[in-house]
Image (cartoon, rainbow, N blue to C red; front, side, top):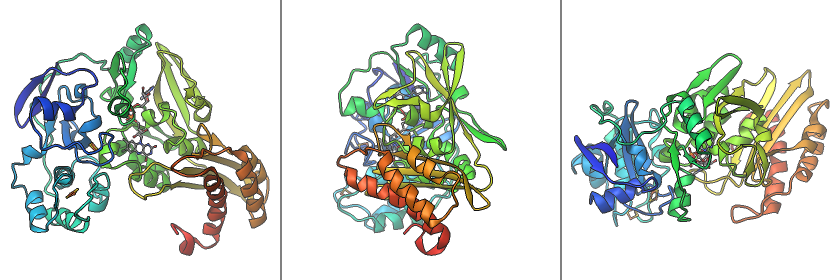
Length: 445
Ligand SMILES: Cc1cc2nc3c(=O)[nH]c(=O)nc-3n(C[C@H](O)[C@H](O)[C@H](O)COP(=O)(O)OP(=O)(O)OC[C@H]3O[C@@H](n4cnc5c(N)ncnc54)[C@H](O)[C@@H]3O)c2cc1C
Ligand code: FES
Ligand code: FES
């Protein structure tokens, strides 16, 4: 059973560990305003707001498991009552045709209008990047969002107690996983959710770690940024952008607001995908991972965590506790570039990250890492060797670009062919050189 607040009423509902909030709303509570478009977090038709002591955040109900709202509050499109300024503006500006996507857009714009997580100071276009419409065209919807403005609203009050026990601390999680190492860890469920909705997998016993405060810390020091494994993208974005602006921009392009309000940095790493965006960026910056197994902790370089496709250096019952990202040394040229078919809300074809330390015109150290170029996120040893100890010059960069193309056996799939990936990866290094020579004319070209 789970217990949550819906429009001021405490709801108690029977729900299995991997039943989705969308199914709960539509089939049990008959709140059918929330739609199912894709069932994989892409279209935003299922957008709802979840509230807790930290405020409200828009999320995709189709990949949110019901126990993840236990002890929290929920708002659906019905909660707005039909006459909210966002709804009035959508009507006035003809922001809807068939209407299927409309509840999702309304909820995303409503989230912005109350200053919900991940929307503060964010343009309307970014706020609706996780919502798709196949008929209206986005102009009227953008206009409606602008016109509705931002009024702000307090977080939910009088939250009910959880109905289910769940580890409240990292120690409790460590004990549970030692005793039951087969337990499936779920953080934001933006990967795991799809195993259920698309692959119909039975996950067996599940533990939810998204609310464990010990895993949600964001600590900034002069030397490094340390993130708890369950820190969500929207919570980490500002600190990552302070570490380097390209990191902030990278996070902006991970999913839409709904995905960034659920997905975690730890989940992105632990999932071990060869096309996850954070690993190459964090490897290039020299990040370290702290893994926890019962009372024991070990710290490893992030790059060593990825052993081979689908295999990570993580024992049964072990979990990622935190990630430490050192601040780049002065004189380090850092660039992180994500290449995907769409700018917004798309998975990378290639994600390249470069941290090249140059002193007196000579490359002292080069760390280059790529996603999409191998079965795991991986460094480019040939290109790094071709740069290190050499003058930072067009000739050196050309030699390194040629070596870089030899460093990898890229993936060849629907996102990009192996040839394309090899070519653009080498060109990214050339581009970084060119950007330095002509910063204004070629950046973001
Ligand atoms: C629409 C959409 C768009 C997306 N766009 C992008 C994108 O642009 N770039 C990108 O890189 N990814 C993208 N993703 C993938 C996903 O959002 C990320 O990989 C996210 O970081 C996963 O985090 P999570 O908390 O949701 O992980 P979950 O789904 O909860 O878990 C993922 C895996 O990690 C394990 N895990 C989680 N936390 C820990 C831990 N602390 N210790 C050990 N194991 C753990 C889980 O057991 C599971 O195996 C997208 C997903 C969706 C649905
Ligand atoms: S139904 Fe498409 S994001 Fe949920
Ligand atoms: S109005 Fe038809 S999908 Fe948006």
